[in-house]
Length: 580
View (cartoon, helix red, strand yellow):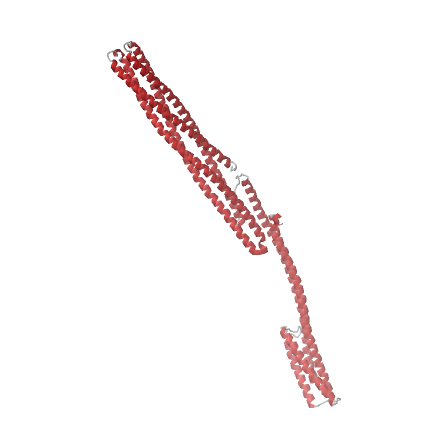
């Protein structure tokens, strides 16, 4: 049932239930006070009534002792009757002293000896002392008269004995009046105190209800405002919207600290996503540039391969021409003019071969320059990937800090729940708030774990990209070294072609003297054939190296496409969040 109630209802119940219990307790205490007042009044009446009854009995015993004295001193009684009256006289005197002693014990026990008469201002203790003095004097006087044996009207109504007797009775009567007055004033004072206490308690109940009502409204509004704001903000973050603006000031309490922590967490996540987004954009641009460069390098390598194949064909043609020249030397006697024409044609072919070799050398230089640029781009991209790796580590540290904060918040909410459990009924409401805080901490922990998972995947992909970059860098370095070898081969080819051209021109110049130096021409043509074979072998080597370089460029292009795929995946993950 409690789980179905909202936080607002639970907090209202937290204020209402203690208020109702306080009011009920106060009413119960008032009823208990009324009962106590009744019991106290009854007890007071019992005490004063008992003491008054004892005082009245003592007065009666005094009067009976006076009557017995009057009978004894009348002179009309027989000896037996006089003895009976003497016993009555002695017995009533003893009973009077005993009853006054009982009354004194009651007054001492109830602490009433210092209670005074409102007119004479004499206390009970003083009245009892005066009574005892007067009564003892009366008993002494009457005993003296009885012992003297004097009888008659003058003895019966002796003024001295009557005065002491009336003084004793007056003291007892004044004690009775003091008891009556004390009982009435005490009861009035008790009733007045009861009324004052009732007014104070009802005023306290009303004040407590008003105070708790105002405090409850203020606290409930503040708590609900904070909860609604946190629900709204966390809902926006869950939907990928990080365009939340933090507050400038926070309350210096737990709710303010919770709000500040949530805002700080969103700012950290926003910075994290922004950093990832900017780095992925940079990596994407670098991967596009690398892909374009690798494609251009592949095209250039393919073009160089075609030129080298064409040059290889020309070298083969040159080799066949050299063989034909060797056979032509054997037929030199048939026609020197034909040899001159062939020499001229060979010179033209050699010039054309030299031009093709120079063009191939220029293309190889351009290809080497592009490979150097590609290596530089790969190194820059490797540095960028390393920077992205370091930032991912920093992001991991931030995510671990968020996890630590959520764990500490969960531990604090658990401690708050324990303290609330110790508080009993008064801590149930705070226990509910602590549970809600624990839920928020759990949600923050889940978000941090999601970030950690995303960072882990990013690190794995970055590691893959870094490995691909290292492989690309190594392959580019190998390609650069091979291009240097190709460049050296082309330099050798150009030297050989230049040497062939020089020899062909010399051959064309000395065709007129060929009849005289046919053996020298034959040796020269054999050397030319050997050079052509060497050129053919080297051109084949260059063609193989160029094809291998073309394969490496294709591998670089494939790695660039893989890097672009990784960046697209990372962009797709980051695009879920909105930071602007």
